Image 1 (tube, rainbow, N blue to C red):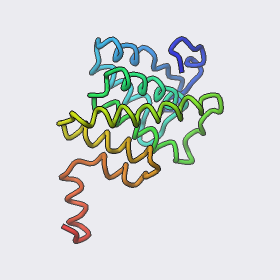
Image 2 (image 1 turned 180 degrees about the vertical axis):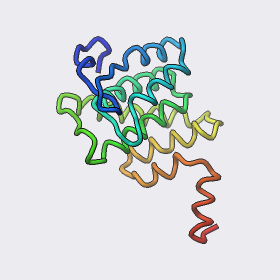
Image 3 (image 1 turned 90 degrees about the horizontal axis):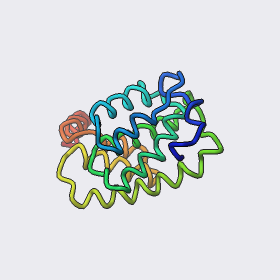
Image 4 (image 1 turned 90 degrees about the vertical axis):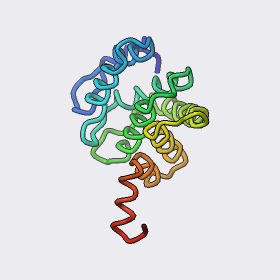
Length: 164
């Protein structure tokens, strides 16, 4: 979805209140105030498993950013994976029909950007987030949920069931 599209102003975020993420997305794109912009997006687009139409629309911009070279930030992939996971929750809004094609294309672009970024990734959070996106794109939601965890969390889960 283009950042100039007027429909952004009518979308809701994770709190089910109107939220326009374009300013934060532009700051990330420009490389100015990136940490604060990611904090804002995490707070507004995803709240305790709740997402809104603005969350879905933001995926289209995040995919473009990832394809454009911003794919070395774990936030990009973790945000996408969290929104995609939440999308399947029946209490969250359905994907607007006018956004569905762009959203699907964005996920293909995120997958490709993730593959490219994974080649040089060293940071655990980045690797886990990319793996979550790859799994989600391949229709493996449980694997995506496991991938986003860190090694210590995965080990604790395996210990708990006696697989360690």
